[in-house]
Length: 241
Image 1 (cartoon, rainbow, N blue to C red):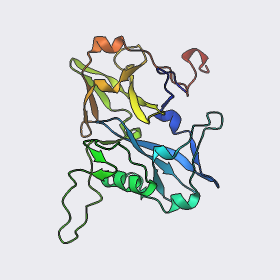
Image 2: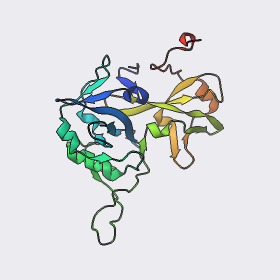
Image 3: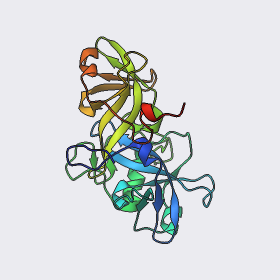
């Protein structure tokens, strides 16, 4: 766990070491985290259910998880393997849409945002894409530009107003509210200060085509951000020689 203003914080890399366990058996390994880059809320978790469900990546609402067991790296849940088997899924390396988020909310009966939120209202998408001609249904492959896979964004360049300052190493998640709070920036290609923690409120734009994250802070301000010590790796002095 990471310390963070009385919140239970965990990096996405740490989360990916956890297994989701149902009431009757292990469901699978936590594979990735999808979040909305407007509210920074985690919308759903991608769970790798192999080998018991071959090739299935099941989408699970974070609201369904209990408190993490940090000793055994397990998230307990109240659902069964059968619940997961019949739940919404996605293919690996395929785009995930806003419609997937709606399906997850409806299936697990867990809305991502409270009533009155301007972007979602109890799992119903606003401004949906046009229906396919003659189908009368929403195209499920519609790509929401604000829906991000945390794992896919590792390595994206970080652009400040005065130039590039490193790349995204990780994201820090507040497990009490399932909200992305901070970005971890690896600055070693530009400045030998290591990795720093930057509040997500400093992000102004994400560009998937350019694989970049634009921030409002300057390079000098980046140097003054709190350092990040990766809890999954030994300190530099403890590295084997």
